[in-house]
Figure (cartoon, rainbow, N blue to C red):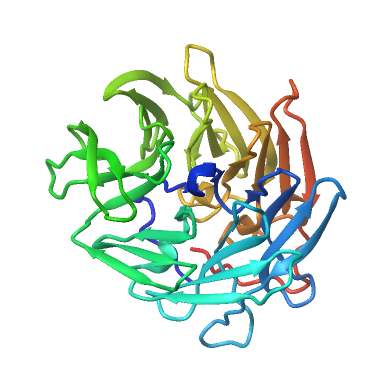
Length: 390
């Protein structure tokens, strides 16, 4: 499984119909916030699947494990998977790539309900594995996937697959308007521009809201659910600079890294309350061989960012710009807890093996002044998986 050419793709977040549940990354809170979906290994077979953590019972159990093998071996390969809940919490939607490079697989898994698991194959998605670095967009039970040439829409209730051609270089986002999604379209060419607007998922009609004079295709981008703000962190070697635009005008600019520090941020996440931005990150102090992973809270005012370190002295990954993309944060529906899992960090090529004690699901209490984090261990398999995420 190769996950290259992902750095020029912007964030896509998940919205579930009018309920406006925003599910991010490889973790997902249930509608009542009592359960969290996350990727984990089977301790015996080493296969990676989706598990659920029950916050009230303080225990985890496996939910679903798709299997895919490396071409030349009989060993299970780590699969990048995206889980999310249905609005009623009775089913779990899981998306993964396996087999052909241009096929996405989707499964609807009943959760503690009678019924069979339903699996779909979505063919013709260019570089399908790269579409999973950022979450898919879901409206009701319609899944929308945008690649570089078209938008694919799969109705999970009927199985109908529609492809809308001519939608090039588009990334989809959730909207606070029921039944709508947001999009960013980067025009082609060196002098291209970025258009931010709303799209009707039924007709694919796009309505521009903001037009920027430069493209947003080289770094990390996030759009607020109400489409009033855009956050952008371009890729730079020495300085990590955040710019937040509001109504097309610069609202704030902030340097995120300390002098001499190497800092790479992952997928950005707006708090739906409109007061802050979350940025998972990987940092490396000057002269240090190892790295740290954590999450940064960035107030949308003149207050300084706040860092919460979750993993210290981790081995430096071979691709330090890619690594934070696999350490993504999901926000609970009540906005009181962040969930972030380090499962995929254990699958990255790095200077040394990932430490077993650092493989965990972290639940960060945003109400706690010290941002106390609960750590739920994710056991590594007895035989380490090959570093297939590269």
